View 1: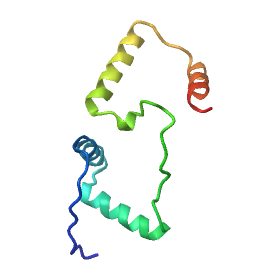
View 2: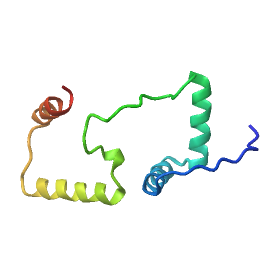
View 3: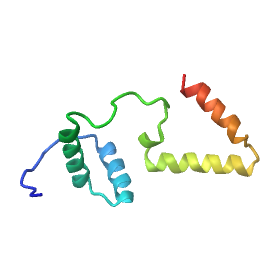
Length: 100
């Protein structure tokens, strides 16, 4: 498909950088992602995903890579210190706290 239009938009710099990093892992450029979004809007007749506040207050997706690595290091340290709980117990806590 011919790409003959240029868009100039203002976005949050951190959001753009984080999105570019995430898209790079997927092998997709920001330009390709925007084109996909525009095609999906046309296909479904609107925004192709729910627009709502996430259930989790500290959504991993919203964190920067540095924040994510910091959280992973904290988790690693807790595991090394034996501060773990059964996965079923953890899922129960998550459901209780975030899926009300």
